[in-house]
Length: 385
Image (cartoon, rainbow, N blue to C red; front, side):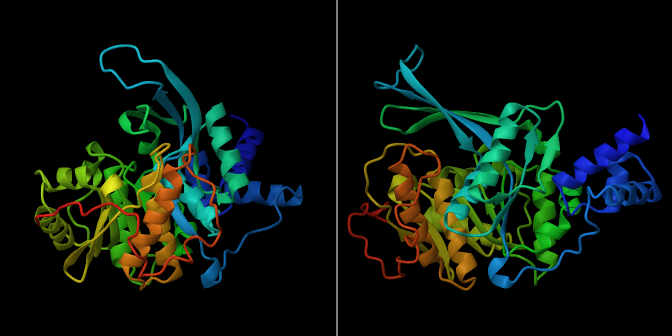
């Protein structure tokens, strides 16, 4: 491969990640550090680069939430009548942008929060569309990994006529490329984060590296982990010291605990076990029935808003985004208030056909207080616990 093509490859790597180091450029391109420096000097002479970038920490109120994980094309198939197993069902089809980390990032952007997304994108039309949409939404994706000759991630959801999810199929093998080495190469972006949010589409070693980084840097960004499915709970390491918050649903908690959790006492015991493994707090979502969260050794339950459901897709991600937004506003905030805000944004989302719903009021979460009444909410999940 000639030197000109090496220089062009180097230029594209810098365009994709302005924070990339000369050492990483040399490793990626198989060049010496001096050869990399020579190409950079040439690009500066050509005015294609404007000199070396020195990255300064952003003011505290401008530091981004860094979301790490999946960015997919979501395909939704929704039956027109009651879903019948084992046969063909008339349905409507739609496509949208999805992925847990990406959905959380878009919700945060709509909440006027600085946000960056570290993900893996293929070099197909879907990858380009995801990149363009993120840029238009206000999500910084400059540190994301661009993979040649690779299809972008997809998630296909089968919904019944009421909008409830029956099964989902995910093609997300490309996220295995988000390795600990990738994380290390993005250290400048991660160091400037107000909060780090990672989904469990990441490889187990990468999740462990994030936890280890959070555990060993007490002054760094708090770490929030968001579960994505029962099978991927296996990607959560045993040692959770360093995790500020783990968000998962009840089925995922059952998988983590290795047993059914039929009562509130069982959920409380399972959450305590997660905290004994090192996580500071746990939130357990229960769909239309509400959420549990830990607080000072206790388990608090909050009811969900009872609204007309159009589509549940993205509701959990909206909940997680609002919780993270609340933590960024006040890192010492009571999780009860954060969860109330999460339930409010989830209620807006399920009433919309969009995975990420437009906010009816930019101040929606600001107007929710920690004494928000449960008017119009579900009955208690467990009445005899």
